[in-house]
Image (cartoon, rainbow, N blue to C red):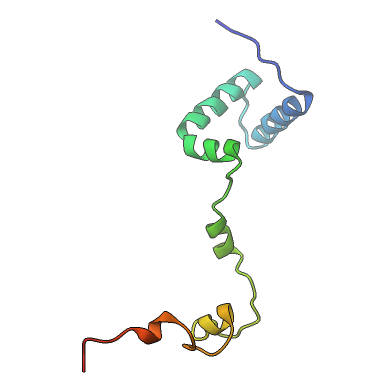
Length: 103
């Protein structure tokens, strides 16, 4: 049993382009079978599909890790407080008020 699905012209062109790219790899597939495989792929990669459709896309933290920002600091690991908050290291930060149990 078959049913018809209406596609925008741009979507149909992209589907045909995908079909042509698959042909370049030696895979001959009809548009109907290609759509069926794409539906199966959607079920297999459901979380990816949901994130794409919900607009969340890539995790912003992973994006930052892949393309870190240059803060103009040679070694931010030792001067992180100064870089982030300004002033001298330990000037007003909580960590200087912690007391060790050792004497």
